[in-house]
Length: 280
Length: 266
Image (cartoon, rainbow over all chains, first blue to last red; front, side):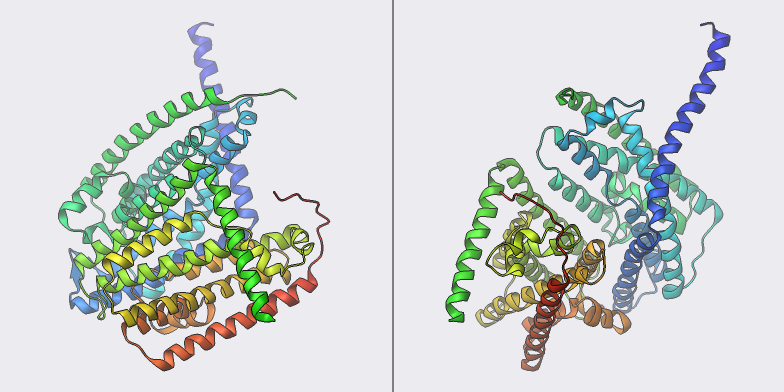
């Protein structure tokens, strides 16, 4: 095939690629939105956490007698934590659970004979599921935040750049989830890995205590770890936008995304050798 | 008569739990990973609060030592239920799929049988963590220790009743598997926060909707400062929750429709 023909085929194949994977995302989107009551009920979970944070940090700020701690007002703390929880919960259940089941049951072999990439199938499936949950969580959380702590100064660039970080945050979450799920090739049960990973997020991901309130040394380390980059970094950027902060977070995300992509690729390549397919 | 029956059930429960644990231990790596993983998990949650109290040493009179006491309490009472009766969390699922047929074919109490049919192995990790925390970091008097032990039992009893209540709703509404699990998770959501910061409507939710107030707040306050009326209130609530759980399950069981499922449990 000559180069002219190539240039014609490539965009078409790219379009086919896009159509195929967006169709996968659309399918999981439709499945999630089909159970609207379930979707709204799950969005109440971050709302409960926001309510708890309002009372916890309300009492904490009152006890300290300060209006701002490390540059954060009570409203900023609750908004940051509320958004972090809303973003985080939209990614649950982790794709690692599904991938582990497929590895353990052997149904992964079924996916392998299909004309799509196993990792990309799960990635778009995850995005299609997370998107409507994110919308529901976001809307209900913002409503509860407005009701309980009032308005906060949000900027358009803060929201836009925050959403960019959030997209890569979900991509990072998926990469790690893929690694954990594929670990089922070597260990029988990956639930312990999932708990430890979740606790990494809980401690260093600013889910209960904002990193801005951490002791300085721990904060500096926590900001470089991947855990804070999933959902805390986007939430922080939305609340207090700074382009330099965006550049810093984007760089850290890029580093970790590269690392996790390489590890997940190697896990997949090695793990796939364990798959035995029997006819019938 | 009833004493000998209770004794028989206790003996049988012990055998069932032993069998559940021994069967899980067949997969040693998985068993150890679940137990050790849960200990690491609990250390992680506690670490968050160590960081919090390093920044704010006291909130409404609540300090890190109170949170350690709370953690020790919650990582003993809830796992106790999960070691002895984790099967209770599968009632709604069993009702939906007609899986209760298996338990109905035995001459033993159905609720007891399904409850002890499963042991949550990771809960053993919680128990280890809870006991270690209690031994090394909880400094209370001997009387308070005895009170702690008694309250763990009452609190575990309420947790179990709450699980049976929400799971038994599956007999009355078609599918309550997710709903029952969400209710249980909501109860746990309140578990690891300083208990004296909650007030207003949220406290009402903790009392009336998810009984976190009786499972955590009242027992912890009793250990910190004993009050006979609170103890009586707690015991009364536990009894009421138990009666409600038994009534809902028994009446629900009469509504149960067999799934005509032939299943072999080994």
